[in-house]
Length: 138
Ligand code: CMP
Image: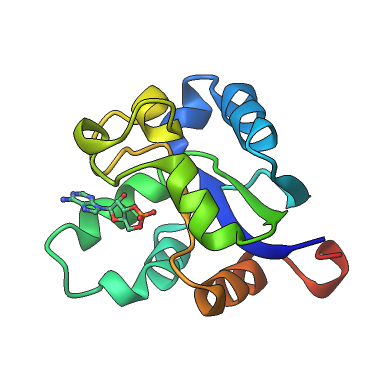
């Protein structure tokens, strides 16, 4: 076992039937899916998840988009999970995402960028607790 990160497949990717394609890339990248569910965020919950971005100009748009349809949050496990997963997903802006990354293949724009990935071990733990109860994380 290794350490963990939190990802979400975002509404655009779920709506466009890319759940399987994205999970295939995650598993091929050496990550184990240790928790997974399908759910829809309310704008209020999306706002809470993205609270650190509250002052950014794109905050309202981000919360509206993230509550526009179902998402798939997952906890992923691998050695060096946070950094390795951010490498696998690629840059926030799909125009800058490297070949072979999830965002290169599935992102539409900086906002509709297909997947989330935690930016630190501390946030991975906080974000995992946001989506999954104790009995769902094992
Ligand atoms: P993520 O890295 O998962 O978390 C922060 C999110 O803010 C990021 O994904 C993008 O979806 C979103 N974001 C960042 N920059 C912009 C932008 N310029 N316009 C809209 N959304 C953005």
